[in-house]
Length: 117
Length: 117
Image 1: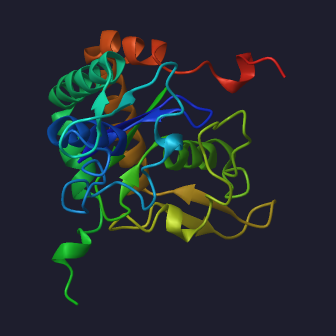
Image 2 (image 1 turned 180 degrees about the vertical axis):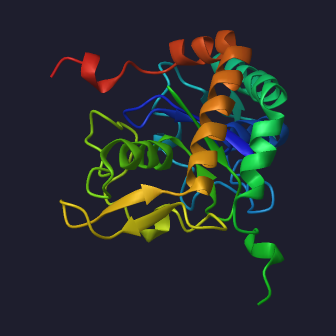
């Protein structure tokens, strides 16, 4: 289960953008930031584009030239602030409303992976 | 700002579905449940369809026949449980992470309504 913050006007922060930034941090590359379905099950196809980060005032990723791999990418200070704030928000919000979230989950259809094909 | 719960496999609970159920409760009609952009700024076009509620195990709305208006709709007990649990989750989660949510909001571009056209 993931939490998404909708601020209106197509400005939202959710698990897709955050996981992309974390993967760029882990791999040092924008290509590493293309999440596999396993890494990031809620991310939508084609999510990795400039529109992914257009809702932020400042750049969250910068290109880096040089190095053995012919260049890569790095998450900016602002990008890292966003990851840290989102993960802390997620932890606190989930901790404060676990009973309600579990009750809502029980009212949903089972996940596709548990259905008989 | 609204919170959305993503459970994967296209199963999500957010402000659009919840506001639809609340509007049906208020108006006694599915047609009343078509939210205006003002009522429900994050709802997507065409949201009111069976897919809106297909992620729940049990019906959340029932048709009601008879009456002066030629019939209407009512939210089921399960539907009202979902509204109550979501609003309680939202209140608790927001209360627990207000500083983080406000800090994230400050890193976003301004809303469209505040931009100069």
